[in-house]
Every structure is written in structure tokens, then in C-alpha cells.
Length: 208
View 1 (tube, one colour):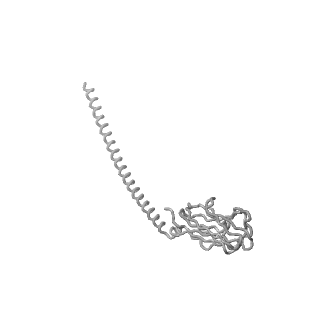
View 2: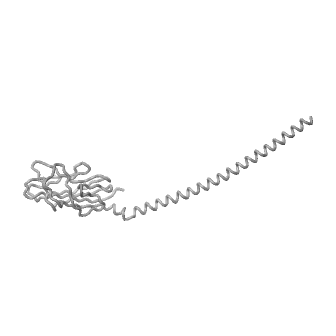
View 3: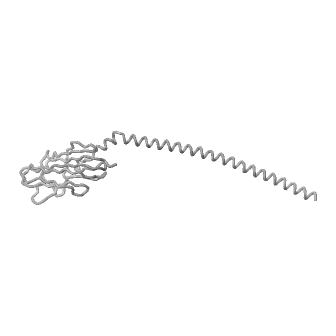
């Protein structure tokens, strides 16, 4: 009987020790978890601070870019090009290349192709004047094109050194093209003298 009581006492003691050890382990883990949570909170606070700084930096850079001379310059788009070479022949639907730039703010007009590429989206005004060759006794016809579609036609009469002009206001999206091309009708001329014909355009209002 004494042996049994001793065994029970030993088991209870060991159990108590086990409970105490388990309790200590739980308290240790809880303490470590609390430390980990504090570290996570500190890390989150740091990330939030860095995010605010990044947003503020991006906002500042955006405002500076919008107010910079480059951005302001891009909103002033205008060009004028003139024909300094004489055309002695032109095919039907051939682009008339106004080869000499007078002004080209925004760099939209390409004097090598005769095509204006819209730098920004907005409403534009385009104007063109074509002069026919003297002594040909033939009409000169052309058309102002916008992205493959005819907007208006230009016509100079058979009498030579006559001029045909057009002015249009159209909306152009960024990257769209505007140009002048010759159209061959019955009895039309394919000749243009140097120094008389011009092609111009200007941005009236930019899209916002």
C-alpha cells in the first residue's frame, strides 16, 4: 500500500512538473509571438511611411513635368512648309512633298515624306495653297487627306499660275497623319512651279 501511495505521489509530482514545463513553454511562445507582432507592426509602419514618400515624390515629379518647358512646348504645335522644288510630273494620288520647313514647333511635319504626324490629340487647323504651272493650260487638282480619308479638294484652273486654297478644322488623335496628294483628272496638269505652294497646320486646342 505504501508503495502504491509513493507511486501515485511520484506521478502527481511529475505531472505537476510537466504542467509547469508546458505552461512555461506556452508563456515563452506567447512572449515570442508578441515580439514578432511588434516587429511586424514596426515593419508595416515603415512600409507605410515609404509608400507615402513614394506617392509624394511621384506627385511632385508629375507636377513638375506638367509645368516644365518641354510639356508646355508640346502644347504649341504649328508648322508651315513650302514647295521650293518644281514638280515637272506627278502621278495620280502621289503625295506632294513640301520640302522646305518654315516653322515646325512640335516636330510634327516630316519634310522628307510630306506628311504631318499629330504629336498630341486635339483640334487642328490645316491650310494649303497650290499653284499651277504657267503655260500648261491644264488644271491642277489635289486633296487634303486625313488618315487615308479625303477631307477637301484643291483646284487651280487651266490658265497657269492660278492658285487653289483650302482651310479646314478637324480633330486628330496622336499619331494620325495629314498630307496633300495630287489627283489626276482628265486634262489635269502634273506640274507645279517652285516657291508658290504651301502647307500649314496648327493645334487649336489639346484634348484633356
